[in-house]
Length: 363
Length: 263
Image (cartoon, rainbow over all chains, first blue to last red; front, top):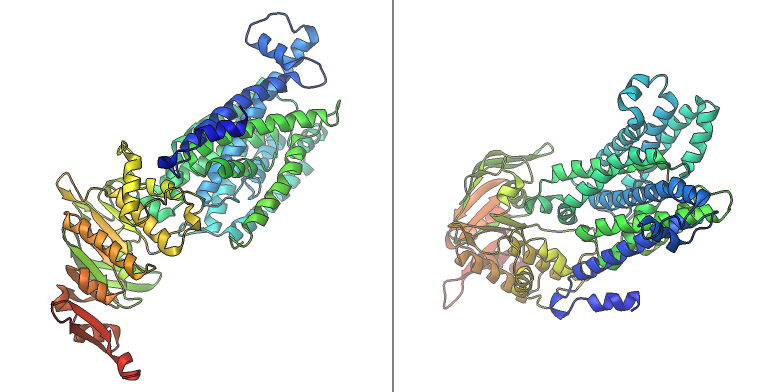
């Protein structure tokens, strides 16, 4: 059965007209299956040759010793933490995008485009560069979490300023939001540049690669740094999905339906800042995942956040695993920063969305 | 019971409502009329908890100013004058938003029934954003109806707040929607509606509140409020109120226009 056939098999019957939840559930199941496959292919692909099937069997304990020596180290020591980090980051970025779009009531809101990522970068760089000098007392409190905490605070600051500037009486102006995003991004970059000016050689090398967005150097430590910020943010986002649906009708109507809009907005902002900040802290600026993934899924299963958010998490994870595979293969044995791959694919997609919406929406 | 005393609202620096007293009884259609800018919508927004006001407003003992959104939502649905939608939902998905959690079981039945009530049977699968303005307005009404599906619960009336519910509807659908509201009131619910059409007001209202510049100019039964004197003063235009032959229904003619035109 092809994918299309599988979809048409679950397409709603006449009485369920307009109800896309069966389709959405089927999509989530399919995405979950694809993610599992993508995960094992990601473990197997790369300069060192190990077939996905062998890795699969070995990982689940069906065989033992099929992977030996260097293969074993490469697969479990290097690729495994990297694939897990990729999935975490992909899910974080895609869900952040979807939640932010729900919050701003606009499908063009994306943490990368409106400066939330840049704010996170500034926060992270502050701790990377000043962590042993000016910010040492703070860094000491948070330990390995200092950089993600800094990124979280940077992202949170930008999101709050953005919301205040772009939203009046519950209505977000798209133009104001995007322009404010440009200003905030420029400001964050300027301060980041100022900090880089003070960085030493080793920090400089780290920062350059990191700025472009990369999963290189993924370790279990990095997973441990990011997961406590990303996983709760994903879980809490799911809890407010129904409220985000009502918010699509406007803040007043959402309130009439019994929703504490102010609280939902705060929860959404903190989730976005936490997930985006942690993603930036460990992998730099990987762009466009947050806009491409929710947009594609809305076309397929509709905008119901109860399904859109989990589906975004899965597709975001899949997309990042594929982008990482491409980044590792295309200039092998060297590797591209993954941010370049997502930008090359994502930026034209963003332009395509703009083209489609031109005329429907005033920008 | 919905009641409010001495409601005052200032928007920006402009005082809009200057001490309004209003009560909307269960089982009755209470209709607010008045010229543009007289404060009708502001009054409804204050009673919906959307704008801060001074004075006292209560719905079943809940202070509207301080009640939590989820305390009020079981007791009143609000149909705003205009609605916007930021994502491409289907009609079913919109109407379903009105159904509160815990009210599941027969969810899809309620959606279908609500759409039939507003003469949109079979529209479940249509994309909301592709509908005409009048159809969108009726979808929103279906959503509001789902929120207060049974007019009476736990012995207390639920309320419909309707801000110009028929403003973009053709004549047949105007009558149909007004019938839905009246039926809701006849079954024990309360209706507070803003209308522009004085004749629809005469036909449907049990109680009329005539606003002028943020004050209540007159309040009472339609035949007492809808008089040539009252209307001409408030709308600042010569309006003649007539009685239809045969029944006692009043109808309103713009007298000045008739005099200026072919007559």
